[in-house]
Amino acid sequence: MRHPSLFTCPLWVEMGNIIVLGLGNVLRGDEGVGVRTLEALRNGYRFPPNVMLVDGGTAGLRLLDLIAGADRLLVLDAVDAKAEPGTLFRFTVDQLPSAAVSASPHEIGLPEILASLEALEGRRPKTVIIGVQPESLSPWDLDLSPPVQGALPRLIELALDQLARWGAPAHGW
Picture: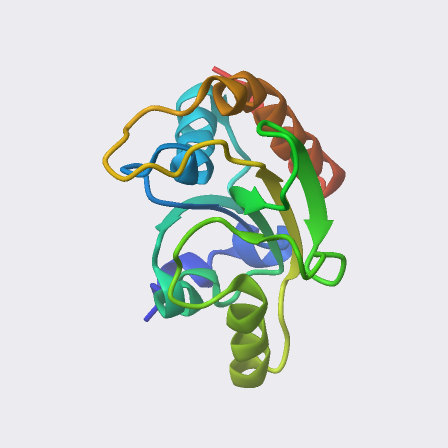
């Protein structure tokens, strides 16, 4: 269950709450890019009080509790769209092509999570997915492949740009 004091904080409610959700498994190479991006954001930037950075890992249905109450959701993940490794994507949930699916072996997909949230809360957050085409999903590989590592600065930039569009600009340390 979500922590009530967090979701009743006046700034959280007044400004509209935003969750930046990093998905993936850091033990599987490029599949961990969403979590790696989240770590870079957490270590390099300060965010307004209405922005929460959440490591969703491979939480599956447990994501429901992590994103409940959000007005906006920015998802960072590896996206397998059969494109050139390192290719960046930006989709809303409604724009997500059926061929582009999370490269992660999450228990359940993001569209299903959001539909479940809508059924439970009567609404779903405005959602943007920013992802990168993985090259390698090798088990037991802690490193990102060169194409995905090379795309990481631009992935961070796209995430910061989306937050600024939503009125929640970040500031570097």
